Image 1 (cartoon, one colour):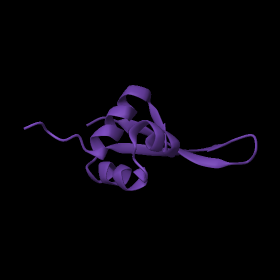
Image 2: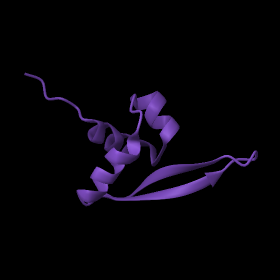
Image 3: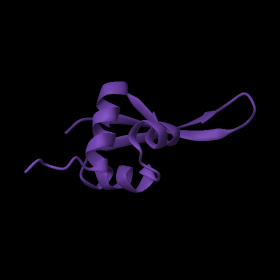
Image 4: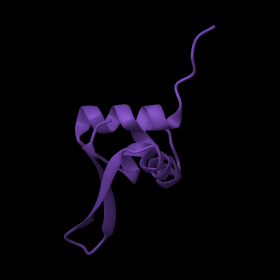
Length: 71
C-alpha cells in the first residue's frame, strides 16, 4: 500500500525547493485551491512560514509564502 502525499506535504516540499509559493502557484502547480488552511496547519505544527505581500504594477496585491525555518 503506497503512502498518500498530503496537501501539506506538497506545500512543504514546494517551499523547500522553490523558496516561496503564491496562491497561484498552489492552484496551478500543486492543484490546491485554498492553501491558506494548509499553511496554517503547517504553522500550527511548528513551521515558521512568513507571508510577504507583493504589489504588482497595476496595483494587484497578493501574498507569497516563505518558509523561514525548517523543523
